[in-house]
Amino acid sequence: TTAAAAADVTTAKVGNLGSVLTNSQGQVLYSFTNSAGASVACSSSCLAVWPAATVPAGTTTPTGSSGVGTLGITTLNHVRQITVNNLALYTYAGDSAPDVANGNNLVSFGGTWRVVKAVS
Image (tube, rainbow, N blue to C red; front, side, top):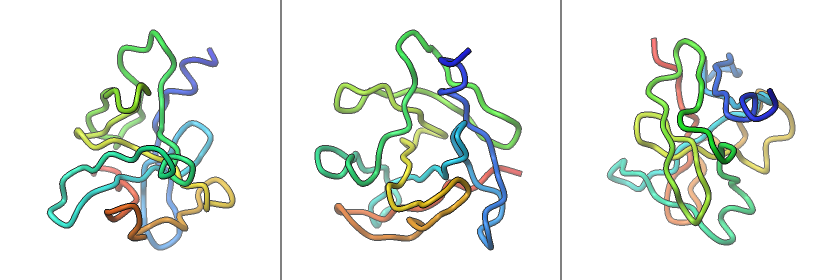
């Protein structure tokens, strides 16, 4: 169904980054952390550049392919957002196509954006 497809997290090989997490449309997924590696919440104008990876209402657990890690859901800014290993996931408006990771290691909005690597 469309609702299930929107919640899927998969993996893809992206350039020299290796296997990273992507959403069901092939968009690379990022985490947002501070200098200590703790998750940072993105809100307001940040979300215009770094849209949250979300799940439809009624979804209790996102689905994921092998290598994704432990998926969950958190509610940030009234949005049900996908998490992996307790890190909230985002896409990047500057990624021009599926399997593109222009946002990797960018520092903005008070933290660092990194692709989320697939687990072995």
